[in-house]
Amino acid sequence: MFLDFYGLCEQPFGVTPDPAYLYPSRTHGQALTALLYGIKTGRGFMALIADPGMGKTTLLYRLMDELRESARTVFLFQTQCDSREFFCYILGELGIETAGMDLASMHKKLNEILFGEMLAGRRFVLIVDEAQNLEAPVLETIRLLSNFETTHSKLLEIVLAGQPLLAEKLARPDLSQLRQRIVILGRLEHLSAADTASYIEHRLKVGGYSGGPLFAPDALALIAKQSHGIPREINTLCFNALLLGKARRCRTISGDIAREAAGYQMIGSEIAHEFGVRVTAVHSLPPQSPTEDGPAAAAPGDPFFELADEINRRIARRAYELFELSGFTHGHAHEDWLRAESEILLDLPVDITETETELNVRADVPGFGEKDIEVRVAPRSLCIIGQRRHSSEQKEGQAVYSERSAAQIFRVLDLPSQVDPDRVNAKVSDAILDIKLLKVGLGKKVPVLIKSAAA
Image 1 (cartoon, rainbow, N blue to C red):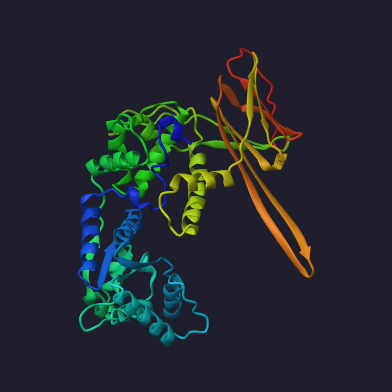
Image 2 (cartoon, rainbow, N blue to C red):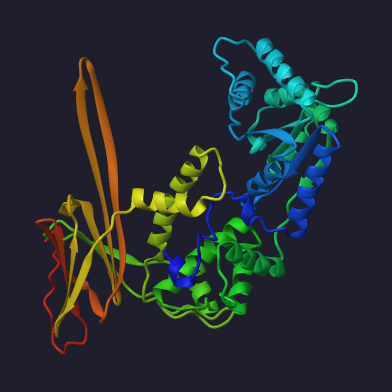
């Protein structure tokens, strides 16, 4: 990762909806203020509409943080359900066992809880995320929840949040009664170029960065254009740029690095060889045509950040699972990420030696066989990929318990000399991966050490 290289305390461009990272743009600030106002004044029904990736869920978590002292909140995101399952989800979040309860009993139990919260002087807020997936009968059930009220006030405040499809559903004639009850409808708009730059600066600051400008002005302009002002896309572009910048040892993300991170495509040709270790030759890209954004980017010398991004997404998904298992407890993003990373990636000690004609790379790969390893080679870099699956069974009486686990290797290395990606020899022996790479420019023809499977 690039945290230490750039002086960051935690990953600032992750995928978990941490409210600490919410950037208060005009549109996000207005939506949050409107929802808070609607809840505090007992307006009953509110809706929030946003395109995918606009930070809707992050805003909802900030809303819950703001209400923590004054309201009891239930957050639901399981929206592919029927009416009974929907009630089960609500009561389940409240710690109520619903087995054997019919819908009428669940209505009664929820009403009791709402009255209890009112008598305690607390509001009760139901937040439904991804509400565009709700079917019409469930939306009608939610409308009927607004009937929980006294002669003086509503017992339940409801926030429906979803993608534009939710607005289309609410416009349907059969849902007119629900639409009429929504008193506040907020929308999140895409960030402007200025907001995009401020958004990046905000997230870096929250992540612990305290140095000078990390992204050059031309990089910020390119990210704003490529992302279309969508926070999730901004995060992906920034992460890839920092990953590539760290590999290049660049303390500032230039426009060229940002452009390369945004537009890179890897060209590879897979070659099976006699030792069973799969080797992929990765060649430089042809020069790109100049664009209106500026001169073409140089051909990449370390073309593996796409693979790194794939691994990063796996780690991010696992980090989010840990975040969810903790009950969405905020403030542990760095710890969740490190734990997820340690679960998915194995440490890989590597040694590189150089002779006049070749480079020799040796790596400890205990437990990995030749079929578990893939080596990808570019002129000035090398990537080792490995995945090992393990399964075991244990019998206790008549029961048989099985366990499956997986271990992953992903290591990118800068090479001290330029090599020929088509002349690589790799094998695994005694838990050691041995890779021989022939240097280019030797002045004489070098025999090809890789044979095709058909040869």
